[in-house]
Amino acid sequence: TGCYEVHDETTFRAALARMSHKEAAYTLTHVFAFADMPGHMISILDDGVLINHDDDANLATNWHVPGPSFPIDAPRSVVTAALLSPRYALVATRDIAAGAELTNDYAKDVFDPDYYIALCEEYGVEEDYL
Image (cartoon, rainbow, N blue to C red; front, side, top):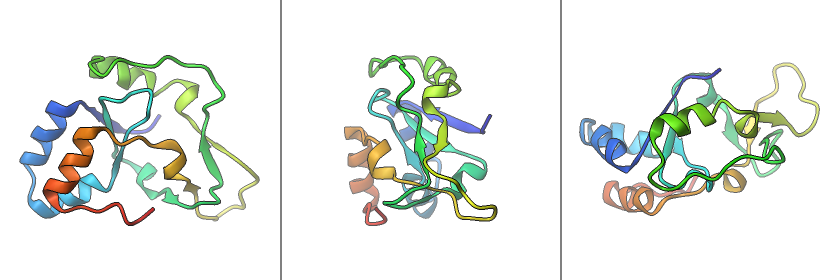
C-alpha cells in the first residue's frame, strides 16, 4: 500500500495555512481528487509522486471495478479505507519495459472540487502542466 493523506475541505485549508506560500503552491500541484469522492483531496506521500502525466499513459485507474460514490461529507476515514480497494489501483495499460517512466493521464482520472479551484486561484496556481 502507498502512503497518502486524505483531506476534506476543512483539513486541507488548515494544512495549507500552516505552510509557506511556496509550499502551499507545491502542494496544490501535487494533490488530486476523484469524481466519486468529490469532497476530498488526496496527497501521495511516497514514490507515487514519481508518476508523471502523459496523454498516452502506460497506467490507468482501475475504473472497471465497481465501487461506491461517496457523499461530499463522507468521513475521511471511509474515503481513506476505500482508496485501498482495487477500484483505485493503477494498472498497466500496456507492457512497460523495465526502467521506463510510469505515467498516468491525470485529465482522465481527476476531478477538481470547487474549493480546490478557489484555493488555486487564491494561491496563484495554474494547472498548466496538463
